[in-house]
Length: 439
Image 1: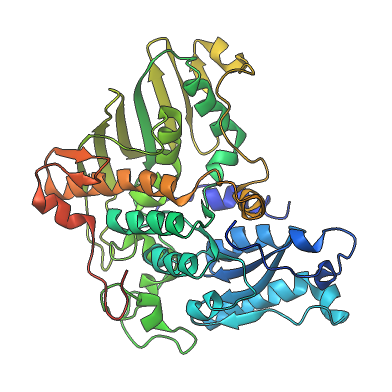
Image 2: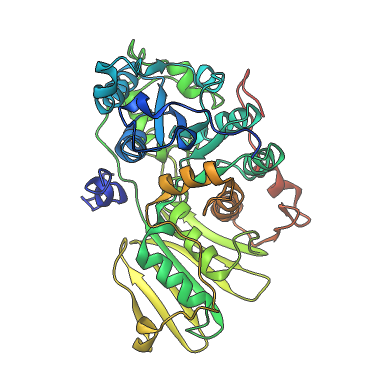
């Protein structure tokens, strides 16, 4: 099934992308031909791991114009993608290269070579979902700050290991979630947190349904010579190569991702957590149902309806339809329907309410998640979406998925991050990793 054409998050941002334990590695500002613009101590050096669709179209394009950032290396298991990214970087720094002050961007097949470089401060991980955790854990242990695409993890246990690792090594971390820098969502959650709809009672998260497939061959055969397919699979189960398995369409295969529930849920569930002031915890109960049609290699849920309950009494419903978010309270409601759509509220006066100086002002960064990451690498202050928060967000999707698979109501302990008295459900909180990869 191929979904009808929609305006996606990536389309929305396509026109916008142009717009301490160890101190950051210092690169002289002359390295970019910017002798007068940025002090040497202000520069952050970056390695880009995963330079496919979003890695280039969002992250690389947002980092390259930043005057206090310098990309030293790119990495991808697809040679065509990494060479394209290398050319983009060197085109950005062409003036410095012509002066001999920039030696060029290095391109790697193996992310471990990027992490091993002593002259790189931070890693941007834009790999497929099943590859988010291991490189970030390795980078943190190597003293690198890390930013990663979302959904942050495939399992709850992975997320706990990752969040604990960056904390142990005192690293800055950021989930690449633009929502917290988008005014309409920041405004919505700030109004809810400041009681403009009274006491919060219910939250509705609406995610797209179906699968948004890109045309690709389902034929099994040898991988192209430009693709290191075994490395692409990594810790995922061994599987025969077909074009439809890789790149964009990996989202619909449960060995690599979680379908719409995790792909879009990483965004809008995060906003539900933000508005509910439950960023560092989670619900205590979950039950749901879903439809898991198998179409060739694709097996993620195309429809779902999941209900959660929090210890504070708030109820959360996550369902498949079209993107949207609604908060209901004792004195009214506020919502939007559609990605970044205008807010609606009852009473309408909620929309013009001012947040006073002594009220709650939620942490944001109008410059976006990349700008926030750079600022925090230098200041050593937490980012607006550190891995602990990203882990808690996607855990909600993971336990909802488990409830759908098992077909029963589950009790969840958000402190222990275990299901209560349910060993069978707890077995699904982790996954086997194909050797030699391990956490």
